[in-house]
Length: 357
Image (tube, rainbow, N blue to C red; front, side, top):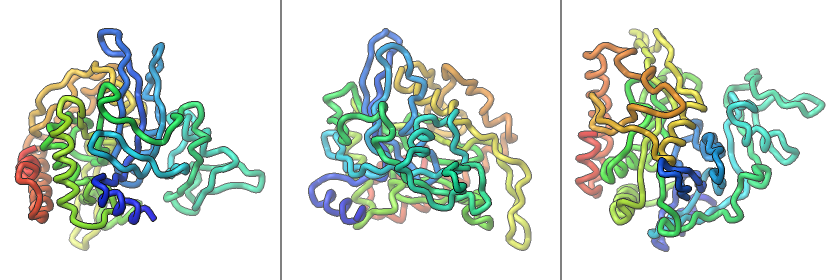
Protein backbone atom coordinates (compact mmCIF):
# COMPACT_ATOMS: atom_id res chain seq x y z
CA UNK A 1 0.00 0.00 0.00
CA UNK A 2 2.77 2.48 0.92
CA UNK A 3 4.66 1.79 -2.29
CA UNK A 4 1.48 2.31 -4.32
CA UNK A 5 0.77 5.56 -2.47
CA UNK A 6 4.29 6.85 -3.10
CA UNK A 7 4.06 5.94 -6.78
CA UNK A 8 0.71 7.71 -7.13
CA UNK A 9 2.11 10.77 -5.34
CA UNK A 10 5.04 10.84 -7.76
CA UNK A 11 2.67 10.82 -10.74
CA UNK A 12 1.05 13.95 -9.28
CA UNK A 13 4.33 15.84 -8.88
CA UNK A 14 4.87 15.06 -5.20
CA UNK A 15 7.64 13.15 -3.46
CA UNK A 16 6.79 10.30 -1.11
CA UNK A 17 9.00 10.42 1.98
CA UNK A 18 9.88 7.93 4.70
CA UNK A 19 9.83 10.69 7.30
CA UNK A 20 8.05 12.02 10.34
CA UNK A 21 6.43 15.46 10.38
CA UNK A 22 5.66 17.95 13.13
CA UNK A 23 5.25 21.64 13.90
CA UNK A 24 7.45 23.40 16.46
CA UNK A 25 6.92 26.73 18.18
CA UNK A 26 10.16 28.16 19.58
CA UNK A 27 11.30 31.41 21.14
CA UNK A 28 14.25 32.99 19.34
CA UNK A 29 17.03 35.12 20.88
CA UNK A 30 14.89 38.20 20.15
CA UNK A 31 12.05 36.80 22.27
CA UNK A 32 9.76 36.25 19.30
CA UNK A 33 7.89 32.96 18.94
CA UNK A 34 8.45 31.35 15.54
CA UNK A 35 6.48 28.48 14.04
CA UNK A 36 8.38 25.94 11.96
CA UNK A 37 7.44 22.80 10.12
CA UNK A 38 9.81 19.88 10.48
CA UNK A 39 10.46 16.72 8.47
CA UNK A 40 12.58 14.02 10.10
CA UNK A 41 14.13 11.36 7.83
CA UNK A 42 15.63 8.15 9.18
CA UNK A 43 15.90 4.41 8.72
CA UNK A 44 14.29 2.00 11.15
CA UNK A 45 15.78 2.19 14.62
CA UNK A 46 17.66 5.49 14.16
CA UNK A 47 15.34 7.68 16.24
CA UNK A 48 12.87 9.05 13.68
CA UNK A 49 9.81 8.26 15.79
CA UNK A 50 11.64 9.11 19.03
CA UNK A 51 12.36 12.67 17.95
CA UNK A 52 9.13 13.15 16.03
CA UNK A 53 7.31 12.44 19.30
CA UNK A 54 9.48 14.56 21.59
CA UNK A 55 9.06 18.08 22.98
CA UNK A 56 12.83 18.80 22.82
CA UNK A 57 12.38 20.79 26.02
CA UNK A 58 10.44 23.55 24.23
CA UNK A 59 8.71 24.41 27.47
CA UNK A 60 8.89 28.21 27.66
CA UNK A 61 5.69 30.26 27.48
CA UNK A 62 3.99 29.84 24.06
CA UNK A 63 6.54 27.23 22.95
CA UNK A 64 5.51 23.68 22.08
CA UNK A 65 5.11 20.98 19.46
CA UNK A 66 2.35 19.49 17.34
CA UNK A 67 2.93 15.93 16.14
CA UNK A 68 1.57 15.13 12.68
CA UNK A 69 3.03 11.87 11.31
CA UNK A 70 5.92 9.54 12.05
CA UNK A 71 6.51 7.36 8.99
CA UNK A 72 5.18 8.28 5.53
CA UNK A 73 4.28 11.71 4.14
CA UNK A 74 3.91 13.16 0.65
CA UNK A 75 5.85 16.37 0.04
CA UNK A 76 4.50 18.99 -2.36
CA UNK A 77 6.55 21.65 -4.12
CA UNK A 78 5.21 24.38 -1.81
CA UNK A 79 6.67 22.61 1.24
CA UNK A 80 3.38 21.22 2.48
CA UNK A 81 3.10 17.49 3.11
CA UNK A 82 0.09 15.19 3.22
CA UNK A 83 -0.10 12.68 6.05
CA UNK A 84 -1.20 9.09 5.55
CA UNK A 85 -1.79 7.17 8.78
CA UNK A 86 -3.32 7.19 12.25
CA UNK A 87 -0.97 4.52 13.57
CA UNK A 88 2.62 5.25 14.63
CA UNK A 89 5.36 2.60 14.54
CA UNK A 90 8.02 2.18 17.17
CA UNK A 91 11.02 0.07 18.07
CA UNK A 92 10.46 -0.77 21.72
CA UNK A 93 14.04 -1.49 22.81
CA UNK A 94 15.07 0.93 25.56
CA UNK A 95 11.66 2.63 25.77
CA UNK A 96 11.11 4.31 29.15
CA UNK A 97 8.89 6.96 30.67
CA UNK A 98 11.75 9.34 31.52
CA UNK A 99 13.43 9.99 28.16
CA UNK A 100 10.39 9.26 25.94
CA UNK A 101 7.33 10.14 28.05
CA UNK A 102 4.98 10.93 25.14
CA UNK A 103 5.69 7.64 23.37
CA UNK A 104 5.64 5.65 26.62
CA UNK A 105 2.18 6.91 27.51
CA UNK A 106 0.80 6.03 24.06
CA UNK A 107 2.62 2.68 23.94
CA UNK A 108 1.12 1.59 27.27
CA UNK A 109 -2.44 2.50 26.30
CA UNK A 110 -5.12 -0.13 25.63
CA UNK A 111 -4.96 0.33 21.86
CA UNK A 112 -1.25 -0.41 21.43
CA UNK A 113 -0.21 -3.56 19.55
CA UNK A 114 3.12 -5.34 20.08
CA UNK A 115 5.33 -7.91 18.41
CA UNK A 116 8.23 -9.64 20.19
CA UNK A 117 7.57 -7.75 23.45
CA UNK A 118 7.19 -9.45 26.84
CA UNK A 119 3.75 -8.92 28.44
CA UNK A 120 2.53 -10.80 31.51
CA UNK A 121 -0.96 -12.17 32.19
CA UNK A 122 -1.99 -8.95 33.93
CA UNK A 123 -1.04 -6.83 30.94
CA UNK A 124 2.20 -5.41 32.36
CA UNK A 125 4.69 -4.59 29.61
CA UNK A 126 8.43 -5.23 29.99
CA UNK A 127 10.21 -3.20 27.33
CA UNK A 128 13.61 -3.91 28.90
CA UNK A 129 13.16 -7.71 28.65
CA UNK A 130 14.86 -8.96 25.48
CA UNK A 131 14.35 -12.68 26.17
CA UNK A 132 12.49 -13.05 22.87
CA UNK A 133 14.64 -10.58 20.91
CA UNK A 134 15.91 -7.02 21.16
CA UNK A 135 13.95 -6.28 17.98
CA UNK A 136 10.62 -5.59 19.68
CA UNK A 137 8.10 -3.56 17.68
CA UNK A 138 4.84 -1.81 18.37
CA UNK A 139 2.03 0.23 16.89
CA UNK A 140 0.46 3.06 18.85
CA UNK A 141 -2.49 5.20 17.90
CA UNK A 142 -1.87 8.82 16.97
CA UNK A 143 -4.78 9.93 19.15
CA UNK A 144 -3.02 8.45 22.19
CA UNK A 145 -0.27 11.07 21.80
CA UNK A 146 -2.78 13.72 22.94
CA UNK A 147 -2.35 16.61 23.84
CA UNK A 148 0.71 16.83 21.58
CA UNK A 149 -1.01 15.99 18.29
CA UNK A 150 -2.12 18.58 15.76
CA UNK A 151 -5.70 18.83 14.53
CA UNK A 152 -4.57 17.87 11.02
CA UNK A 153 -2.19 15.17 9.82
CA UNK A 154 -1.03 17.49 7.01
CA UNK A 155 1.94 19.87 7.19
CA UNK A 156 1.16 23.44 5.99
CA UNK A 157 3.13 25.10 3.15
CA UNK A 158 6.53 26.56 4.07
CA UNK A 159 5.33 30.09 3.33
CA UNK A 160 2.49 29.72 5.85
CA UNK A 161 5.05 29.26 8.63
CA UNK A 162 8.40 30.80 9.53
CA UNK A 163 10.07 28.07 7.52
CA UNK A 164 10.66 24.34 7.18
CA UNK A 165 13.42 22.42 8.95
CA UNK A 166 14.54 19.13 7.41
CA UNK A 167 16.59 16.74 9.55
CA UNK A 168 18.33 13.64 8.20
CA UNK A 169 18.97 11.20 11.03
CA UNK A 170 21.92 8.90 10.62
CA UNK A 171 23.44 6.54 13.14
CA UNK A 172 27.22 6.33 12.99
CA UNK A 173 29.58 5.37 15.80
CA UNK A 174 33.00 6.69 14.78
CA UNK A 175 34.00 10.09 13.32
CA UNK A 176 30.76 11.59 11.97
CA UNK A 177 29.78 14.82 13.79
CA UNK A 178 26.68 14.79 15.98
CA UNK A 179 25.08 17.55 13.92
CA UNK A 180 25.82 19.46 10.73
CA UNK A 181 24.16 22.41 8.99
CA UNK A 182 23.92 21.59 5.27
CA UNK A 183 24.02 23.58 2.05
CA UNK A 184 21.35 22.68 -0.55
CA UNK A 185 23.90 20.54 -2.40
CA UNK A 186 25.00 18.78 0.78
CA UNK A 187 21.36 18.24 1.74
CA UNK A 188 20.62 16.59 -1.61
CA UNK A 189 23.75 14.43 -1.28
CA UNK A 190 22.70 13.42 2.24
CA UNK A 191 19.24 12.56 0.88
CA UNK A 192 20.78 10.32 -1.79
CA UNK A 193 23.26 8.66 0.57
CA UNK A 194 20.56 7.70 3.10
CA UNK A 195 23.27 6.67 5.49
CA UNK A 196 23.38 4.52 8.60
CA UNK A 197 25.36 1.50 9.84
CA UNK A 198 24.74 -2.17 10.41
CA UNK A 199 24.61 -3.09 14.09
CA UNK A 200 25.63 -6.23 15.94
CA UNK A 201 21.93 -6.85 16.59
CA UNK A 202 21.25 -6.84 12.85
CA UNK A 203 24.18 -8.70 11.29
CA UNK A 204 27.18 -9.26 13.62
CA UNK A 205 29.48 -10.01 10.67
CA UNK A 206 28.72 -6.60 9.14
CA UNK A 207 28.65 -4.56 12.35
CA UNK A 208 29.89 -1.02 11.78
CA UNK A 209 29.63 -1.21 7.99
CA UNK A 210 27.67 1.41 6.08
CA UNK A 211 24.15 0.68 4.89
CA UNK A 212 22.43 3.06 2.48
CA UNK A 213 18.90 3.68 1.27
CA UNK A 214 18.10 6.67 -0.95
CA UNK A 215 15.97 9.08 1.09
CA UNK A 216 16.20 6.52 3.93
CA UNK A 217 13.19 5.19 2.04
CA UNK A 218 12.73 1.46 1.29
CA UNK A 219 9.44 2.12 -0.52
CA UNK A 220 10.72 3.98 -3.61
CA UNK A 221 9.45 2.80 -6.99
CA UNK A 222 11.11 4.16 -10.11
CA UNK A 223 14.27 6.15 -10.79
CA UNK A 224 16.04 7.05 -7.54
CA UNK A 225 18.06 9.80 -9.22
CA UNK A 226 14.75 11.50 -10.04
CA UNK A 227 14.02 11.62 -6.31
CA UNK A 228 17.38 13.22 -5.54
CA UNK A 229 17.04 15.79 -8.31
CA UNK A 230 13.46 16.61 -7.21
CA UNK A 231 14.64 17.14 -3.65
CA UNK A 232 17.61 19.30 -4.74
CA UNK A 233 15.32 21.47 -6.88
CA UNK A 234 12.91 21.80 -3.94
CA UNK A 235 15.59 22.92 -1.47
CA UNK A 236 17.12 25.35 -3.99
CA UNK A 237 13.71 26.82 -4.81
CA UNK A 238 13.01 27.47 -1.14
CA UNK A 239 16.53 28.55 -0.14
CA UNK A 240 16.22 30.89 2.83
CA UNK A 241 12.93 29.27 3.81
CA UNK A 242 13.99 25.63 4.09
CA UNK A 243 16.97 24.63 6.24
CA UNK A 244 18.57 21.18 6.28
CA UNK A 245 20.60 19.40 8.94
CA UNK A 246 22.16 16.01 9.52
CA UNK A 247 21.79 14.56 13.02
CA UNK A 248 23.86 11.60 14.23
CA UNK A 249 21.95 9.67 16.91
CA UNK A 250 24.77 7.14 17.26
CA UNK A 251 27.84 8.64 18.86
CA UNK A 252 31.63 8.57 18.65
CA UNK A 253 34.63 6.52 19.57
CA UNK A 254 33.80 2.96 18.53
CA UNK A 255 36.72 0.76 17.54
CA UNK A 256 36.09 -2.56 15.76
CA UNK A 257 38.87 -4.91 14.66
CA UNK A 258 38.40 -7.38 11.80
CA UNK A 259 39.66 -10.88 12.53
CA UNK A 260 41.23 -13.24 9.93
CA UNK A 261 38.13 -15.46 10.07
CA UNK A 262 35.87 -12.53 9.19
CA UNK A 263 34.62 -12.00 12.72
CA UNK A 264 34.54 -8.53 14.24
CA UNK A 265 35.79 -7.73 17.72
CA UNK A 266 34.67 -4.61 19.56
CA UNK A 267 37.79 -3.09 21.13
CA UNK A 268 35.96 -0.01 22.39
CA UNK A 269 32.27 0.72 22.64
CA UNK A 270 30.72 3.85 21.21
CA UNK A 271 30.15 6.89 23.43
CA UNK A 272 26.43 7.19 22.74
CA UNK A 273 24.64 10.51 22.48
CA UNK A 274 21.67 10.42 24.83
CA UNK A 275 18.13 11.33 23.79
CA UNK A 276 18.08 14.49 25.98
CA UNK A 277 21.35 15.63 24.35
CA UNK A 278 19.96 15.28 20.83
CA UNK A 279 16.80 17.00 22.02
CA UNK A 280 19.00 19.91 23.16
CA UNK A 281 20.53 20.12 19.67
CA UNK A 282 17.12 20.19 18.00
CA UNK A 283 15.92 22.77 20.53
CA UNK A 284 18.97 24.90 19.75
CA UNK A 285 18.30 24.65 16.01
CA UNK A 286 14.72 25.89 16.26
CA UNK A 287 15.52 28.56 18.86
CA UNK A 288 18.50 29.77 16.83
CA UNK A 289 20.86 29.55 19.80
CA UNK A 290 23.53 27.18 18.43
CA UNK A 291 26.96 28.60 17.58
CA UNK A 292 28.21 27.03 14.34
CA UNK A 293 31.78 26.68 13.07
CA UNK A 294 33.72 24.93 10.30
CA UNK A 295 34.70 21.36 11.15
CA UNK A 296 38.41 20.56 11.07
CA UNK A 297 38.02 17.31 9.12
CA UNK A 298 34.70 17.58 7.29
CA UNK A 299 33.63 20.32 4.90
CA UNK A 300 30.64 20.96 7.14
CA UNK A 301 29.34 23.50 9.63
CA UNK A 302 29.03 21.86 13.05
CA UNK A 303 27.98 23.08 16.51
CA UNK A 304 30.66 24.62 18.70
CA UNK A 305 28.17 25.57 21.43
CA UNK A 306 24.80 24.03 22.30
CA UNK A 307 22.78 25.34 25.23
CA UNK A 308 21.82 22.47 27.53
CA UNK A 309 24.58 20.01 26.64
CA UNK A 310 28.37 19.77 26.61
CA UNK A 311 29.13 19.37 22.91
CA UNK A 312 32.89 19.37 23.63
CA UNK A 313 32.76 15.88 25.16
CA UNK A 314 32.08 14.55 21.65
CA UNK A 315 35.13 16.21 20.09
CA UNK A 316 36.53 13.58 17.75
CA UNK A 317 40.15 14.08 18.85
CA UNK A 318 39.20 12.84 22.32
CA UNK A 319 38.60 9.41 20.79
CA UNK A 320 41.12 8.96 17.95
CA UNK A 321 44.54 10.25 16.92
CA UNK A 322 44.73 12.63 13.95
CA UNK A 323 45.94 10.03 11.44
CA UNK A 324 43.12 7.67 12.37
CA UNK A 325 40.56 10.46 11.95
CA UNK A 326 41.94 11.47 8.55
CA UNK A 327 41.93 7.86 7.33
CA UNK A 328 38.39 7.18 8.54
CA UNK A 329 37.07 10.39 6.98
CA UNK A 330 38.81 9.57 3.70
CA UNK A 331 37.44 6.01 3.66
CA UNK A 332 33.89 7.21 4.28
CA UNK A 333 34.15 9.85 1.55
CA UNK A 334 35.34 7.21 -0.93
CA UNK A 335 32.38 4.98 0.00
CA UNK A 336 30.00 7.87 -0.55
CA UNK A 337 31.43 8.78 -3.95
CA UNK A 338 31.33 5.17 -5.15
CA UNK A 339 27.67 4.98 -4.14
CA UNK A 340 26.59 8.37 -5.51
CA UNK A 341 28.27 7.84 -8.88
CA UNK A 342 26.01 4.84 -9.54
CA UNK A 343 23.18 7.30 -10.21
CA UNK A 344 24.20 8.56 -13.64
CA UNK A 345 21.19 10.86 -14.02
CA UNK A 346 21.92 12.64 -10.74
CA UNK A 347 22.72 16.37 -10.87
CA UNK A 348 26.51 16.77 -10.89
CA UNK A 349 26.32 19.33 -8.08
CA UNK A 350 25.01 16.57 -5.81
CA UNK A 351 27.87 14.26 -6.81
CA UNK A 352 30.42 17.01 -6.06
CA UNK A 353 28.88 17.56 -2.64
CA UNK A 354 29.16 13.85 -1.84
CA UNK A 355 32.84 13.99 -2.84
CA UNK A 356 33.74 16.99 -0.70
CA UNK A 357 31.44 17.26 2.32
